[in-house]
Image (tube, rainbow, N blue to C red):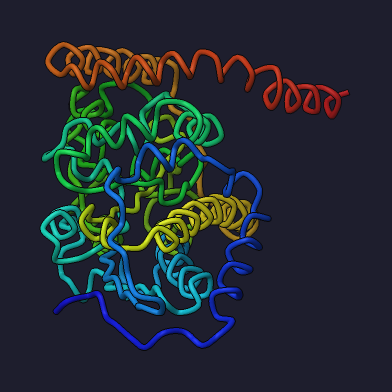
Length: 388
């Protein structure tokens, strides 16, 4: 079926209303900065095909998540709602969840092939096909969310991400951030590196490779199967997100230890768009789609932060038996060492990996300096004042 559907011209005044709607959206602040160089770098250089006034377009989007999945699933739905409103109904997005397309980790392939026009997932899920895709979700011991967003939108992030996806005929955009994630739920306490050996754990991305290097048996499991896998002993531990989503999954009922994070300090989801699909959209609808993706991504970040704060309070009040732990220095240092060794190996055999690593490291060095004398210094000063 052709997803691009046609209709009669819009009523008089319709164009004025659409322009007014698009202008109002500029109030979203940084989301709609004029001459956004990150959006330009990710867009096609090919001019969109000229279309008749009032032409309508319907895009199909495949998401990795199950229907009505909180926060993650809310994000593409918000995108679809805003796109329809901002375009005056000229652009609509139909969302298929994992229960419909049956391939939660096949979203990239379905968008690349044109089976779907768009996708919502996470870039590091494609590491087996595109090794450098993992850098655009998050990296162990890397940037926190504000630092990473700055790198994406005003540093080299968008440009480098598109270099990676260009050869596949796909455009990639930030799709929403969870902020710093927790280190996972464990059936037993981790006191030494020896405790990691033979542990069966669900943990994706580069962090999985780090733990595998330390003897963990790593696997990736679809979100809908996580609870039963941990409950039945198929795995001994799992990493999911943080309080915002973990509490809803019920992990606190079956695992007593909840560890703080190290591996995903700024987990960014991903909007994928088939490049040919984007090229067929008129320029105003391309702009609306990019603006709506950026707004939806930012909204997911603040939504996730709010829900994590609420859920963290619930854990403390309703589940005091859950033991909050931080990995001891011996384990943390072993993970940092393994992480750096793996990064060095990736850089030696892959020029693009080396290029991305260098960009991230250079920006992190600058950004972290500011984070330390702004956010960190403020929090430390308040803790010291409270201790008096």
